[in-house]
Image 1 (cartoon, rainbow, N blue to C red):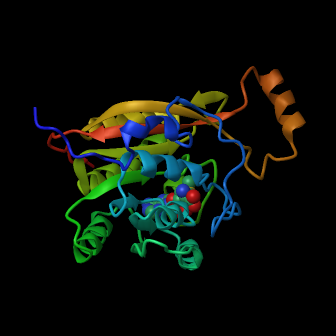
Image 2 (tube, rainbow, N blue to C red):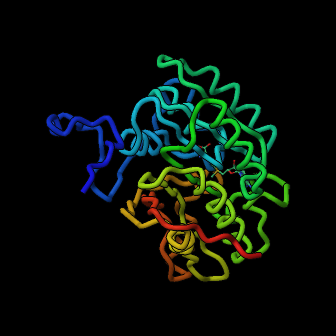
Image 3 (cartoon, rainbow, N blue to C red):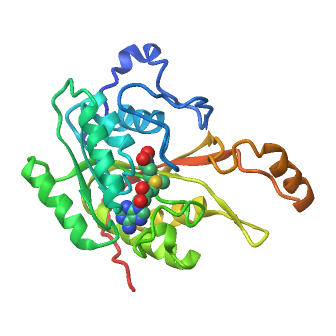
Length: 278
Ligand SMILES: C[S@@+](CC[C@H](N)C(=O)[O-])C[C@H]1O[C@@H](n2cnc3c(N)ncnc32)[C@H](O)[C@@H]1O
């Protein structure tokens, strides 16, 4: 069997040295890293430790990372720190503009390229724009996809109907998400990784397992599941300071409060892609 190219820069003869690399599926990250240009002030941004772990484990320096829900650019800032090229897409023009300022404020010790495109990741033309940018930089394929979509409607990111957080039903949210997966999976190299970061939601007295629904969407598009990591989750600003009230509601309503979200890892298999039927 032909040996595969390494997908990271870890030297396994020195494997005991990598204390910073997680290998357990329970991620107790605690406080988010706020070094460099990272700031915790965007509702729904993820901890920089997540793209850090994904990039260190599944990319090499100089490779290319794509983030179709890039928000305030946590992935792109981290990519600069770690010497990975990165392209992000963000729907909201104001968020995209602020993200560009923050990314530029981050030192670029490895002189990598970063681009943030404003657009709808569910639209095939947006993926074409990403492909053009990749080709301009000399890349045929990307080496890692990081997907951190809205957790359906639990935070409204904008009034734009193309925003996944405005999908009127769970089915429509999943359909839009599927379109993003379909568009971006075709830009990823075979045997390379997709990271999905998502939490579940509660609606109408029922736990809605967004994580498992979206996991199935990714698996249908030529990916095999490699790991489901469960990460500690910190309350959104809205709920902060209302801990006792929510605890009371949980006791009264017979449910549990969310204390975790998922970081899932998938590997792209060498199979044909299904297209999304509308
Ligand atoms: C959970 S946040 C991602 C936050 C990001 N990981 C960060 O750390 O800043 C989801 C982002 O997806 C964006 N979004 C929603 N629908 C989109 C779409 N159709 N195309 C591109 N971006 C979209 C939202 O505006 C929001 O910024």
